[in-house]
Length: 528
Ligand code: ADP
Image (cartoon, rainbow, N blue to C red; front, side):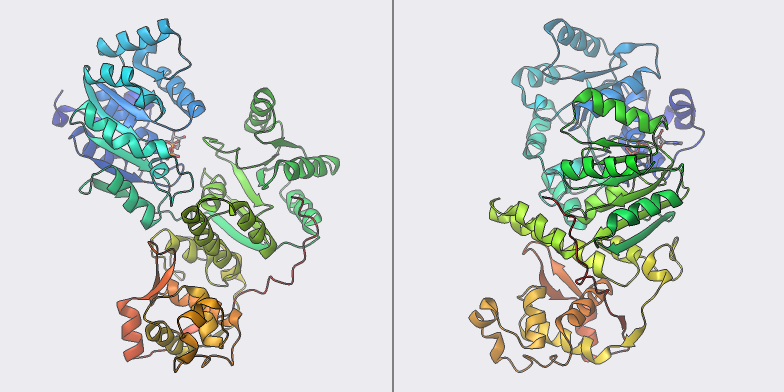
């Protein structure tokens, strides 16, 4: 069938039973069936799978779906098979198959029966498979979790870097990349690596208006605090994320002895126990799962009412992904994170010993987590700004859904201070990161300041009547307001934007609020 002869709504109903497309799905499906390279950025739960499954089902040939997780691929294949009477409609191709199974897969593809072929990136490098796929009719290649291509994503996988070369060998077929990671840098990396600068790009908003964001200082009372929170949400489903397996076990046990139905979940448990605990949660035999990040990939429980971060995650992408598991049905979703700077230091320690570039990236990502946790501005605005999206914190959807907006700190006029800050960035020729700019403002020296003789500059220490915390808070707010930006290529060197230059020429009112003071929070409960 030609693309214009396909009745997409009919096919949607036929295969998936849905009456309408969700969000940008229809545009994406059209883009693919017309043979365009396409790039889809949608938050988790946005309905990405259908974007390639439907075109695959209605087109001639086999679509290759590259996905990093074998378990997820199996789920998807089972789901697709459920839509059809032919088991051969979808297959997974991987090294665990027997010779007979591989032959079956090949014959189903050759006969035109198979519409979706799921492969892990490493399987796609196998010469035998490449040779075979070269000789069959392929409709397109979908690359799921495309952020794995980028070192700036939260799950970099080197195998993903080879995909473009392999696909080229398979012929001139359209590519569709899909991801739920929206930072501008990751998007740029994906388009560059897949060599599709002109791909049709579809980006859904990342605003989850029904989620309530809250950050609390992590004190020694954290455990009783969590128990109280859960008891207030009695009978509701929730997930508690911890950094270590040991902590997962401890908290799960603590909840159990306090009469809360909870199970642990982490990669140290055997597969059977993990599956059982996951099922118990999905079937509502338990209310709470206490988990490491091993839990959640592909979890589609619509009515998770709260996600608690016992430990702050290593990036805002992870935070967004993990909190995103709350309220998928559009109902209540309370996201509570406990924060202590000590946890950041702990995460920094994990990075020691890694290659320098990786450390720099890890450190830059962590700084964003700190900024998010300590800020007193709209958390939603901060998060969405991080994902390259502007959000109006007064009128936007869900504008009042965070602790900072509900309990605002007093705002003060900071016009003069903004001017000074921007001038310091300019005077130091836009060559330094946050840390040096702040030190220059308050008049402190470190090795970098000395080496570059910043302490001999006229504006050095002109901001010393305010402390470093004040300047840090102001800098973050000036960043989100768009007067400065952080250059990603250099791991965070601060640059002036046009708007920043204009401000220096014509300073205007700037109302700022000071950050939260979390540093006094003591945590005696962290167990490495
Ligand atoms: P993502 O991969 O973006 O996280 P999924 O593809 O898993 O999202 O889809 C999320 C949920 O939305 C699934 O339960 C799916 O069945 C549902 N869904 C997808 N498209 C539609 C639609 N057009 N109408 C109703 N529900 C949909």
